View 1 (cartoon, rainbow, N blue to C red):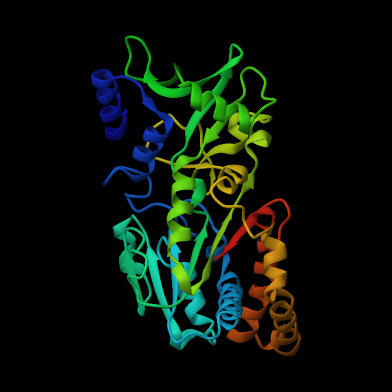
View 2 (cartoon, rainbow, N blue to C red; view 1 turned 45 degrees about the vertical axis):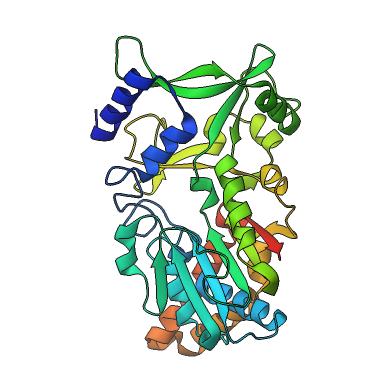
Length: 354
């Protein structure tokens, strides 16, 4: 039994069962022991690949999107972009490498709770542990980006049982320190909330309750202020009703060493825990202005042009084996991965225009 598991078992023995949201927060973010707090996460040498980690193409297209939004906002002299869940700064690095037209106006703020990753953030950016206060970076529009962040925010769990809803909690096996799932009753208001979001759920169905993601969205929408901007979140997403119709293991997943891991209660801190984002729960805070797949978003912001350019370079220079030709060939392969309908291409891009 690992150190974090021992600490959680001791806490449960003293104070009683904890919600899965509390458990997930410890498993991912406990200082020095949680999955992200110990320096693990995205990257070719880490545990999984996100779109920015596939290669520079995703950042190049995001740079084009930023330029388009900057133009829409009147080319302001100060253009604040806050990336939430920035990790080691891969997306920011590839955006800057693409040399967007808005570069001279760009104030790139990287929000990352794992301070061990700040050393990897590119020069010309600022690093912080949480959102800046509205207006902290001066007057002007603000863009908030979150790529595969919301799925890592702690979620509570509810289960339909005996014709009503109960909270799924983490407790310990009787006479044993092993962590297991249990149940406790929910207040009437929370049971009614579950009924509204999953009205046709059968007994045994479970759903995530994503209060942390809803709170994050509320805070993100407050950042643009009177000067406008937008919030853009990219993630795997469904509705609560859809999630209720599927087994929990289909939408609450664990990852380690570039593969699926096991039970989320096994060895907390050893693996990533991720949950599909419930679009309807976010829409209850504010309906998104736009909802589309990552594939459509990339096409809308210049993917085809960049891939065609890569093909031309490869056709002209491929036999030489130069760096530009190799990068062009890589761009073509990256596009295939980013638009894979069974993988990253199926992710949902949610946008709120402020």
